[in-house]
Image (cartoon, rainbow, N blue to C red; front, side, top):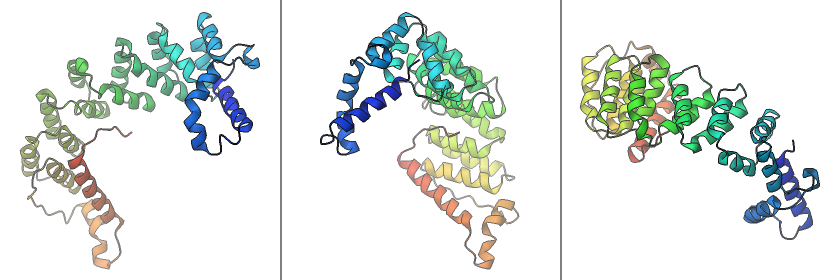
Length: 302
């Protein structure tokens, strides 16, 4: 099968060669790109048996070969042309074929399929991404797309997400709670986050998620947690403090961490006068806190 992206690259190279005065810089070419792409789509090519790229893709579709074409191109390290993707998404079988691709072992195929499955907003997409979110061993790329999909205004799935979270533990539970924290204003989510904070299995994460949830009621919860749990370590103490400050609260609690390993490591250079690289880390965390207070953006980082 013909790699249409390569064909388009050749078309652009020919345009630059034939019109050197018109395309002097990459910006010149970029400005004309929509027109050039439209022309390419409708220009017959010898390598396509005299068909235009549009007609070639139509033939693939008539023969039921669009998904085979995509698999072959991606498996060989190529890129799928937009004209093929657009045709694929118009195919009713897309909601059945894309989930299968998502479960394949090919990274390029998984990423392509997941990105386009998102666009279908189908029950099949819901199932694939819920399954990936609940499985800590699922393909990392698929889980990133699951985060994007499930955290972006899927209120219709909120009940299911909450129910699913009750069945999970460990990393899978944490991942799903990161998604749920994006659904601000639902008290069920808030109480679930508070519950996880008090389990104290991952205090830094849930302090951060409560700040992200952005309910000022969490200020007193975070302070109380620190007061009621004197065994918290230095890192947990810092994250609780930063969360309170992000929510607009004032942190006044103090604690002696002189025996805490992280605290000792971070402050040991004060005695020698050597510069401590962790000081820069704390400064960065404080800067991030100030930034998030102004613009608490969402985003999953794997």
